[in-house]
Image (cartoon, rainbow, N blue to C red; front, side, top):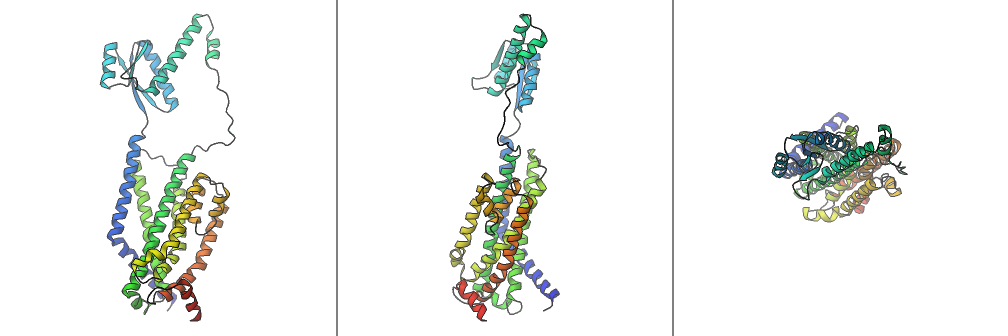
Length: 396
């Protein structure tokens, strides 16, 4: 068979796997459910984390001046205060009672709120500004010059020296890293299972015997891995695009400068991780005769991915630890640990390249072995041990 015809076989098998799985009701439901949950999370987060805003009623010219200082101070503290003028205290009080304003400042003499559990953040700023204004007035009445008053009131705070400066983007990057790890974990597990389930289904129905009468086992296996992997990649892209679109619509998206790089890191490590695990999942499906036995044969791989998942979460918390550094270099755990270290900026480029090279090299060594075990086990009835399948291939 020529190289060109071999590539055609790969494309045909990959297209078959892609189309059949994309049409599967379980895939459609899981994709829609994931998008729904993600969208609901974003919308709820938007509703409960919008910028804090207060309406402040003011009565009298002096209250208006104080209110403007309150608004300026609030802006510096990260929330917004909008002023509303009222001609009488009764009108401002009624506005507070009706909820039209959160509080009212009356002639710089008192603050009116609806209940004692009212807007504490706003009241605290009003009190701070009022205290400063009254102190300024008292100092001026005592005969101090304006310069002396400013020196007395504008005392600089004590300098703070941080031994470990905090990255202002650390919280956001950590959240992105956790979402990326969850996505990678779910995709690796789900699509690895699909590879194993597809193999055992073909074996149980004996369809594989017909297929292998016309094509080589390596072509069937690698075409299957390619098709299912492309589908997983497309699903990741679809979920990511939906998340960005819903975030923009909800008005809460703040795209960091490295957002595209972050998405690229997650997609790249999915491809590398899936290529590593897919061959192993195929062998797990080939060595059992029925779907009912698949969970048992997949248990070691499932445990390996779960352990790698927890190592990935640990890498988010302590990306510079020895455990995180070692785990990000080991092929089974690298797809779930190295991305978080890269997103958090705790893995230099050379470490990412080295980890990727180790994973690619391990996959290149592992895939031929997996293909051998698959080609022998998938044609044998009953349960087959991996060691027996490899030994039988060597004898052949």
